[in-house]
Length: 192
Image (cartoon, rainbow, N blue to C red; front, side, top):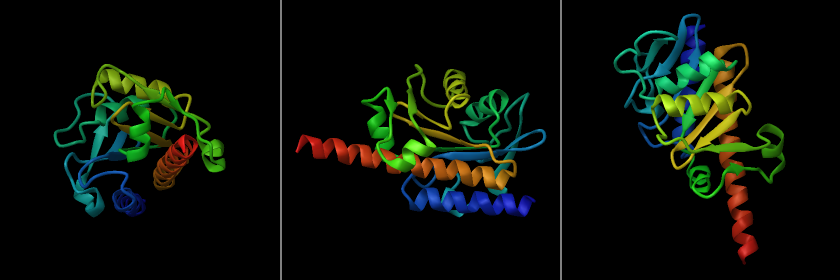
């Protein structure tokens, strides 16, 4: 099972980077385990992950040194939702729209089917804090994807097998960015 999970982590890291949803060391992603969650280490190249770039974080107690700074958000999501995997990325168009919208409502069929709407959260601190963690967990209890204004998006997977849940979360992230691009093009077209 660990080999399949690592393969999924490696593929998601490569795809997030090549699809320009993260920069080289940005973003983070995780899968739920029996005792906590397996997450990418802070500062590693996501397009070139090795097994050593993954770290186990317990659901309770101190967060191990070297774990992603967003581990606090992942932990809160796993404690408050049915998520089996979580992907955090910085999709450019969706983040740009988050600066102007309270929620992103897809116009395209795929976005309407899989996302319906994506709330834009505006906690006072938008990254790696308890406040941001609570806002994201609350949103993901109701929606599969949310945006932190001006920062990035979180998408969760709920499939039972961790590698499938991780790929599901990644898929939702790509749907978000595609829907955001279509929404932006539509708005630009209307302006003529």
